[in-house]
Length: 68
Image (tube, rainbow, N blue to C red):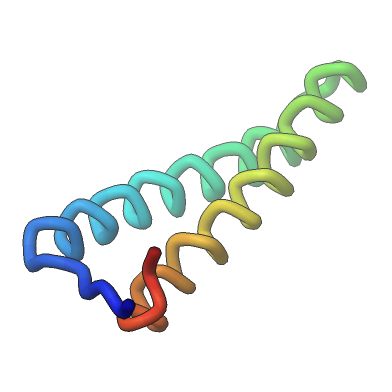
């Protein structure tokens, strides 16, 4: 049974995608400026997980008919 995203769900996904993109940009930028190695590692991990989350959100938006 195929389910479709409603308009409000699509808009909410766009909002989440925008927020995660901003977080990824900030983590990447601050990681380059950080001097503490532990902080750099945390920011790099956050950037990697943020990138994965963005890909998942994009999949929801592009494969709308396959959402379960």
